[in-house]
Amino acid sequence: MVICFFGDSLVNGTRDAECLGWPGRLCAPHIAAGLDLTYYNLGVRRDASAQILARWRGELERRELQGLRTRLVFSYGVGDMAMAGSRPRATADEAAENTQILLEAARGYDTLFVGPPPVSDPGHTARISELSMRLGTVCARFGVPYFDMVGRLGGDAHYIADVRASDGIHPRSAGYARMARLLVEWPGWREWFD
Image 1 (cartoon, helix red, strand yellow):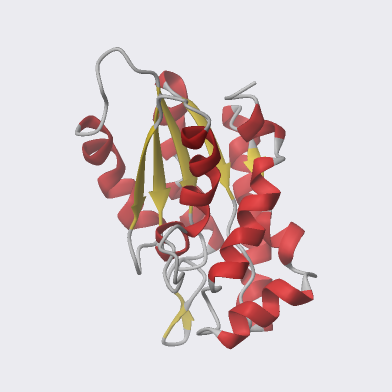
Image 2 (image 1 turned 180 degrees about the vertical axis):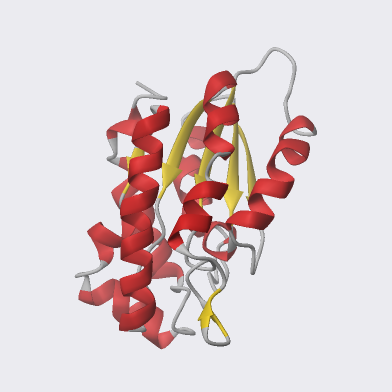
């Protein structure tokens, strides 16, 4: 099996001293158990939905392996909702429109979407929450399982403290581990391995 994780710096695992992020932590137990799994962390720092839309297809084509099933995980939104001057880099409408990625992706591949997590700034997190609702709606329309990360972690004082102790956006190792613990129990992820 090949799994490609497409996204931003939070997929990349920026500020994780263990260099695993949540994708590495999700895949490591399956590899340790002997599963023939190749995973690609295609998280790019400072990318938002427009950049991921522009690059995902070409990156996928270079990573598919003949004879192995390829699955896709998308995750972004924090960068879209970051302020660029007086407005966010993208509106919720624009980011949702960029999520038309899923129209093509879900046609040919098992696909999941992990929503963006909260950050330390309440205003930024409010915009992320609004976007998360929109992304969930888009995913439902395309039949793609959606995990509401901001909904699950928004009230998690330990996670927010970890983000605050970092740079206000990215958690440290403990925060990424927390994300992975939530995702490993998610039926959307578990169904790929049961």
